Amino acid sequence: MQTIHQRFRRAVIAAAFGGLSALTALPLAAHAADTLRPDVAKPLNAAQDLYRAHKYKDALTKIDQAAAVPGKTPYESTMVEEMRGAAAVAAGETGIAAQAYETLLSSGKLTGADEQRTTAALAGIYFQQKNYAQAAKVAQRYLKAGGGDPDMRTLLVQSYYLSNDCASVVGLLKPTVDAQAKAGHAPDESQLQLLGTCAQRVKDDATYRSTLEKLVAYHPKQSYWDDMFAAIRNKPGYSSALDIDTYRLRRATGSLSTVDDYMEMTQLAIVAGTTAEGKQVIDQGFTSGVLGHDAQSDREKRLQALAAKRAQAPADPANPVAPVNVAFNQVFAGQAKQGIAGMDAAIEKGGLDHPDQAQLHLGVAYYIAGDKPRAVQAFRAVKGTDGSADLARLWVLVASK
Image 1 (spheres, rainbow, N blue to C red):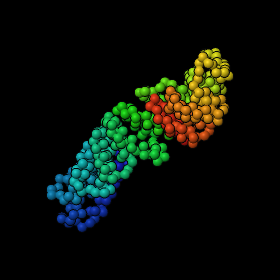
Image 2: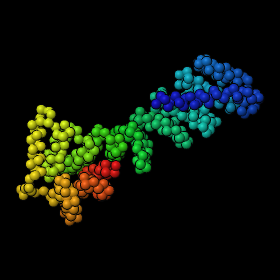
Image 3: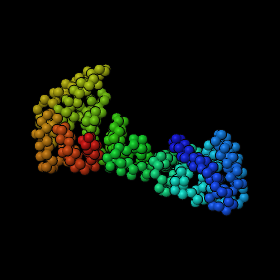
């Protein structure tokens, strides 16, 4: 953020000192609105020379002499304060600079680009002083006046955050990142991180989850997926039957990485009745080199053998599997066409205990079969409040790539 302050400081200094010689070259008339009288011009010219020699505090002394001239015109007062602010910033006297810029802005004599530059410089000074509340106030003035520099928006967001005003951070950032995502542009990762942190602090769970969705969509990392799944699981009404589906998403995005990942997903698949999936997962664990090398490799091999046995075993009448799950297992077993037809029939018939979960699994089936458009269509039809709709939105992101 220091670089933002420095850039606006240079702009104001250039404006304050760059045009003095040309101004004083005009005829010096005591009552002219746009000229400086000799009593004012002389110390300001000396201040300009001292500034160029990097003698900033001496320059301030000369500017004080100009300020002490009685009966100054509004134009002369404006020139004095512009130069005082710029010299004070260069001298590290940020308090004097802030006072000078406040005086300039309250005078009403600055307009257009001059007003915007001065406002931006003042916001940067307050930020440097760690007066974040005042920095935010001045930055708001800049933006409301039509200032378009994105650095000032960044300064405003960070001022809110550093003054512990997370509600304002959420209010400012959320519309921006939502609009960017809607337009198909990837929101900045650091802005999403900040939005997620503040949404969590103010207990705005909906914004927190939607921010995590954008992070996994545009900046996928294992930590974001973990946070996303944790947020879904912690949502009131979440169904633990969907634990297997969080692993399915991770597998689809290449995010299965640990022994526990492979072992737990295999066991969950066997319990869910998708035994062909369980065999694929445990085999993938060994093929990838994650399994079979540690102290519990014997346990891992036993689970692999069990998964292979269950995948080949006929239906067990003592432990019946719902028809929709039998059909889902067919998809994993390489019989996508028959499996999807069976799932469609079961869903259309109705009477399912968890219809939204079945609709979610239909989308997964289409995704596995390589029919991404139908998968997206199926996912968008999921409306459950048990976590299935949250997972379906993530699947839409995956299937839309």
